[in-house]
Image (cartoon, rainbow, N blue to C red; front, side, top):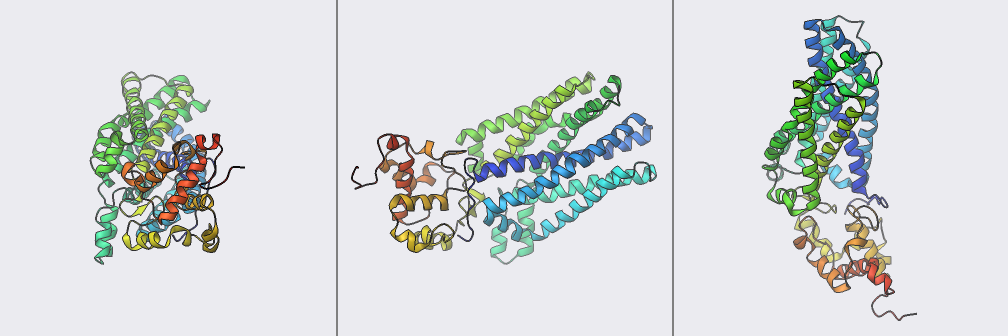
Length: 450
């Protein structure tokens, strides 16, 4: 228990990370997809002397700067801020495990940003060949940044042989085993499909927001962007490939073990298939026009698909933040760490919540509140998102028994770590939140009524 915990009332730390992270993922995926689309489209436009497409690419590059670079930078900083507060130990683990991976990613990111600005500002100041080369530098750097980040993110669910190699002292082998883990390649393909689809959708939005194009010109440009949208239909088979490589417990959770995971997975796949099918049948085959309103609807569906898939990816790791290593309560799944905590108690190891001297003399309900903050606040609030009050409408004995066997009955929950007294304290605190207990006039055991 090395770090303090950050309490986000009502929303909860997990939801705070989710909101910031999904926003950033959408923006970052668009930046990567727009780079690929721009480089490929300019290549074809130069060869065919397509002045309309070149004019649009110049407009789209300005949107890329204003939308992706500014909002992406703000949300990227926001991710680091929120994960460092809500899950500091997991953040520290990822930095220490992949410090050179992060360094490489930041180099690619710097190249991406510089190339993006150069691409926008040099449309009329460098030769067509050099300008196209800048576009390809941006596209490659952006995709390389995604490539590196994908390895680190997928490690959190499928760690490969990272910990075995590290325990044997093979640190270089551990890095590569963790980076190129079991879900690296399917996840990379899924993210690439998402990048392309978002780029295609924003082509429809940008061209409809401009008054510089006729209806016929907008239709032509939208049909160009449709070729980025169509591959989104591959999300379903690639998702099957992905889930065939996740741990069995995670696969069961997505397949019905946790209904929220199953529903979000269904939403993500369904929206992806519908967007891909619409792009192929309506835009590529029949060359339909897409209005601004329809473009925004497609963007909303893509946001649902992206957010749902990110939610599933995060959720099926439970009860871990880093699979098989770090529980969601910030305790390492290692007897060398949790057994001393079970003997000495959590309350003697969280000085940022309570002084151990105060904990020793406090009443059971108050101690239970402190235990809740130490072990539950990372995922639960009291009354907000994933609120615990709605989950404990039982009597004391049932709540106490649930705490004892929590990790058995709900496999997405980590085991309780603490003394028998702390289990009873937590049960007492949770019972005090119980609606029926409150309605009957809650009293602690052996407490005389007023």
